Length: 505
Image 1 (cartoon, rainbow, N blue to C red):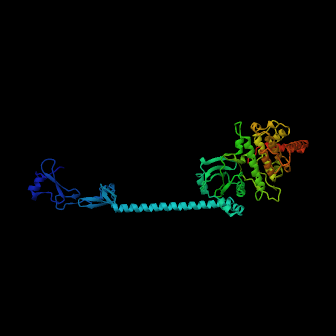
Image 2 (image 1 turned 180 degrees about the vertical axis):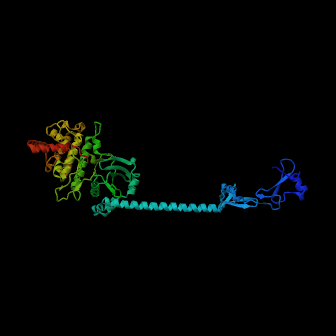
Image 3 (image 1 turned 30 degrees about the vertical axis):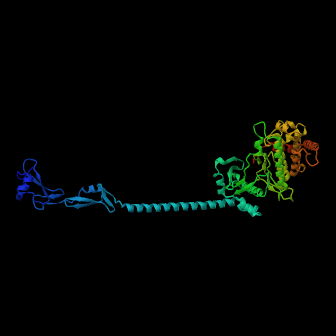
């Protein structure tokens, strides 16, 4: 139903007929009729009731209705009713911004102070964590080093060199020093891999260039050989024996630090693919140097040392082709008052004394035999551990046969024949004497050393023993060995096996 009051507009009614104006509630308002002249009254927004009576329009509590959702939508949590309307209040700690409740912003000074304080606390916590972690790591590393030091027989090493306290102190090198010397064992510093481990080139803080041998596996035998090598080399000072600078016991596998010998091994120089190898004069000089070193080990140190693994791969050469005997892991001391000791067999077949192999009795003549094999290797450029002749003889047996039958040139290296002259036969006779089956018939290393020096100066070989007598003696012993029946033949076959088989250490 559409109804209206009078015929005046709201403006005229309010202005001219104030006494008869119908909208008497103070919270009411006049609305012009939309269907002809006149007006009608309604309560103002936010109020409800009767606008035609005094105080007929009363306030509406919007917070009780859906209007409060507007507060929630704007992020406010509190709705507060007001006369004719309502307002949204932000929770404590927030303020109204752009019609929404936002976190109350702090003043620039307070914000900076809080930021600096928080950053400082965080930095201190990080630094404290780093320090604690580092201390824990250092403690763990220290305990691990102590464990390895004990495992690697550090105390035993100190006992072995305990007679000279300065040696023990000097020989033990910290791990940090070796890591710095090798750039933490960088692959670029690797010199090569051997049967016992990897060798790295390094420069110590005192500027010594060294070779550092790092064992591949930590087994008791390797550790025992390591300690043995340190104990022996710490007592040796000879120009033709590789120098040991020290060792490190702080790793799971021991580390040995040697002087750096730059020109590989005698084996590598002999067994090249090119037809020409070391000159004869160099071969003879190298043989003499090796003999000097072994003679020194046998007779010039306080307790004689048997190397037990003389072979061409254990002879290092420097840039001037000066020889250095190396790898003393299998070496043993033999007191002067004893002629030999019974041990577990160690060495390299092809170079190993057959008598020692069968009896396990190690004497200085075992090294003489191995040196004789090296002499034959120098003369023939053939590998003792793999050579087999057309008659299925090993290198040693074939060499002796050719020497006895006067056909030595058939097995000699052509360069030796061309350059060696009369010296070659004398060295061959000396080599044959060194590899006699009966150790008592072999010369001492001191005699071998003097013989080689005599050959170099073209003097008579061996003390008061003519070369012809030596050849006759070798031929006679060879024929006597062949004349014996079953047992002797069996021994000969076993010997040939020893002289031709491979047995890498």
